[in-house]
Image 1 (cartoon, one colour):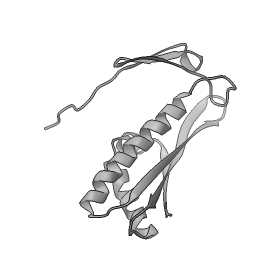
Image 2: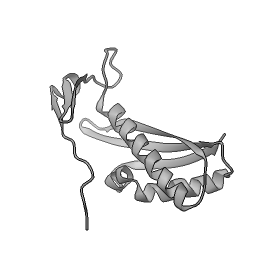
Image 3: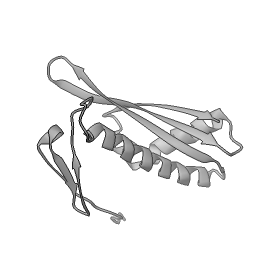
Length: 138
């Protein structure tokens, strides 16, 4: 049985050059177009941050179930692409760096692949956004 853990609502006025707010936060966020030389953030940045945080959290559960202990840093790259005049789409990459543990790159990549099957963001983009996976050990 599904049980809801959390809910939030984002509201944006003015699209990529407007203002964003969250239902459970009193801050407002200036939105800017990708590459703009103005102060603010774009949707791709927020998506990458959220995905990285979610993936790193899911990795914590996966490594615990595999009885592995190491520090991790998850880097998510999101690319906004254009094909033709109006076909915009996202692609991306997830790179996990492990440190302070006893794990090989092959073992880490296996855990990253497993995490990609359980992370809520990965499930949401499956079949829609091509995400490349990689891993390294420091």
